[in-house]
Image (cartoon, rainbow, N blue to C red; front, side):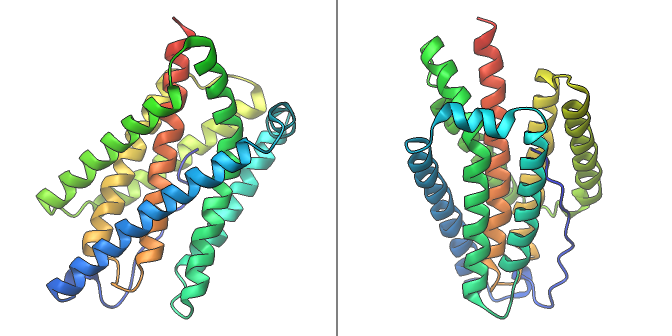
Length: 242
């Protein structure tokens, strides 16, 4: 799934303009909320996968044009979730946006993880666990790179936006004309998402206001979820060739 959104942050007081102690507390809150959101997503996903009928999920969500409809619904939910999470009038609305986004990703992950479990059972490899470790390693490495260099990666915004639109077009074309996207596309998406991690992390460090930790955590959750999505596909493709 590509990142299809691109928002300009134009808040009056950014983290970089705040006092050092306030900035540190803001960054801490962001990553605590991110950790909580990831744990919540894992918990919801585990509950859902142990409850639903896997064959019904695959038939309902993936067959025919259904996956395109699911994608459009997911994009709509993500758009609403971001609006709610960026609300400055109600903390409850911000958390509702984050909760909606977690629920949306839980639904999106269902067919992918069902197929990944099938591949894992067939190959004996813990594909989901491996993908989780690799996702964490890439995310942590890029995050540390931003915080150590203190570089502002906001200049990547236009490039990432264009890349996301191209990726979305390729995905829709694949669904419409029935061609597979392949490993090259997955690696290209990992590179694109890595750019988003740099971009969003520098926004957290420099541009978000210190009362928008929920919105910041949501954007980082999007990066982690999408990175995991494509790493799982890469590992499944690698195992299918063995």
